[in-house]
Amino acid sequence: MRRAIPENNKKQYVNAVKFFSAIAATFANLFITNYVYNWKFYIWLAIRIFSQAFAYIWDIYIGFGLLRSTKPGRYGLRDNIAFPAWFYYFAYVENFIARFFFIIPIFKWS
Image (cartoon, rainbow, N blue to C red; front, top):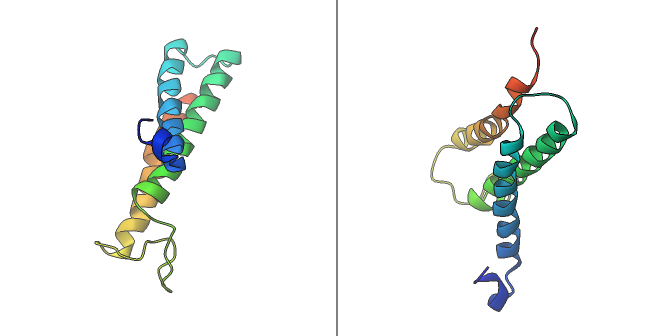
């Protein structure tokens, strides 16, 4: 926030929202001891999904610099890449799976 206010840098405000949503998701975990489907569960789930989706989009677009290529044949990649293209496509999928892995125990498999 020190950098955002004097420079009026909107990216810093969005980054602050990302961190706030992660903190809110951490505090929401305090209220879920088991997966009982009541109003607390649905609020927790909404906070977690928002936080993880926001962080995923931030990672892909800002952190990795992806989805901004202007060169033909590089769909979804940045202009300058340091690794083979398949590595970045793998990172898209792996990052998504890792961020939303918390959903698996929610479902009752019996």
